[in-house]
Length: 252
Length: 252
DNA sequence: GTGTTTATCGTCAGGCAGACGACTATGATC
DNA sequence: GATCATAGTCGTCTGCCTGACGATAAACAC
Image (cartoon, rainbow over all chains, first blue to last red; front, side):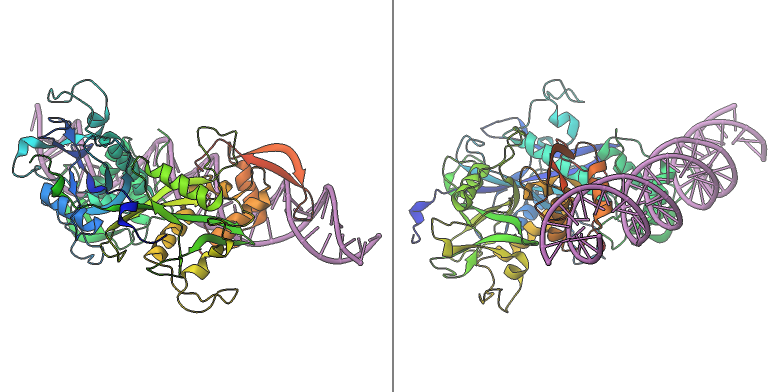
């Protein structure tokens, strides 16, 4: 059959972002408050339309920068490590997921170190870091009396998928370092695993595992004592991106 | 900002399929010959436009049925196991990936047992199972003198991503059984792993691993001798979908 | 029967993870 | 300044799993 522009229905294509970070020993996601219908006043994941001349990854990186000021870490430049990790997550295209029109959303997952404060177009009250358990639970009230209404659209599903991706991916990759500042201690990295998995890990076995895996961590020579207690060695993420054998997640 | 239909550019949304199977000890993918420009006469992955009232998974299942006659195996009905496995792979939306217009393609991965013969709208000469190495290699000639021109569009990238997904996913899941008929022997399952990974596995260790993992394989009681040699026990896939600890892929 | 092929069971050594003891180096408290 | 609490780091031991590989079993071809 020849090419016929009327043979296919037009879609709007958006990118939605699951931006995760670890704050106060809890896995948190970035949520923005919707200022317009539908779901006006409800919390949602940040996102926006893909522009006509833009790649999907570019659109996601642009939205991330607009919402958080974060630049994306370019894997081709391992030296400059002060950016977030960004990867495509999955695509959601249910008819009716947006009541206005047919929207296909390409969700992306971003992992970032702990940040000072979110900004959404300069309006801080319309963006916040919230523990993922709080965003996903139905009913009840959040920490600061915020009514825990479900996220807008199908964003609870998207967030849930993003969290699951992060939880499984830190098992077999060095992705957990994306939650850490450029230099970090073994204990800080362990607390990332504990927050993301929601479990406790043995500090001694964890230390043996991460320092014994070649190429995973590179000591920088410095030490720090910002956690109290004996000063800890500082490390940077090594070149190894795959962790083999993987870090084992406890059975719960 | 209020809702403004002119604020976003229209996209065409398609689903493309990476349909994998194991034939004659080789991992093969379904390819269809393009009958119209662009890339007329070249091989491509099967796919098509998503309809206006269709979910992405529905569209992928419909395309799969149209191209192969396969129904999709519904995970909610584990008893009836005569369908293919289908999952979303990734989404490709480079501007310029289709010279006609802006097309976002949601690629899906399908795994099927060995099938008699492909059919593409009843025309067998326009569809074939080809070893993935043949489809991905640049230049040279395929087995039957077919010029090994690169796949159309960015389909080489999509196929490559799909193969990589399949290779890694059979490590930690029971997905390899999707390449097998409803009842199969340990040896047949091992040959699936060998074909997908392109390695040789020790039959004795493999047998110990798969029969020793609870819930992975369920003996049906029957035996078969279709491979020659001593009759082998027949199994069905057990309820366990996750393989823990995973099957280890040799270092090459 | 003999040889070939495939399936299945066993044995053994090495590696890794979980459990946990011991020691070190800092800041806080009395 | 001594003591305590906290966190980091190094070891040890045991059990499980894997890779390598020997041995046996049950079919078919000749």
